[in-house]
Length: 296
Image (cartoon, one colour):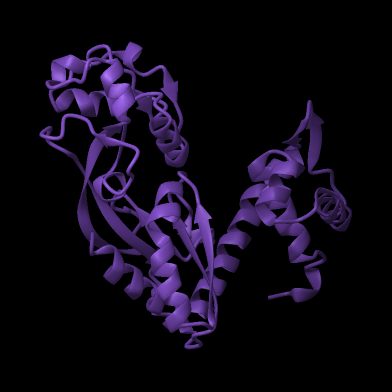
């Protein structure tokens, strides 16, 4: 390889790549945890190093120039290669000390993980934990997290996954709300109830209707994809929500709605990158999570 022909800084190339993928300097700065002016200088430096203009302003965002579009796939391939180098190196590491990033939904991060993390900190004080609490799926191949707790089986061939268990989810509401709608005893009694929707489409409604309810879009006047927000609205009497029964039954301010109704079942999967799973540090955290999450 002719190294003398490489005239740019990889950090500048990375700044260009993330900015191109996010569409603005402010969004890219949030992803990288950097200051926006610093990121802007790195992108400008990359343009100077290459001698071309990569972006043009469009409103408040940025659009790639023709030259930027031409370079994007090449720089993205460099980023993928850099991630593979990092993953392979981490996979060979036998050091127990360091950071492990765990991705989980907001409600799992707040309700299921605290006692597990407390035990991990007692047993392995050299391991630092970073919680990525989000309803969005973290990209493990791009190191957005090291381990993910998911409710679906991954399909990517370079990920390893372990199914922990199937979880029953029940409907919950406050006693006051149920009294207000006539203390329903049968699925038909919920025809005028209000539900807190946790998807932007109709999947939640269709799932409930398969359980014997007869709901329409009018039954879902509030929508949020954040389970913690949904749960707070339920606890404040705004309507009916669905949650892992282990978490829901532990909340004293709510009660099950139609407790004899067949629960919604969904799986818990623990996922890591195939190369990262050989790291002693990652494997230690993965195994502990698997053991603790297996017990309701």
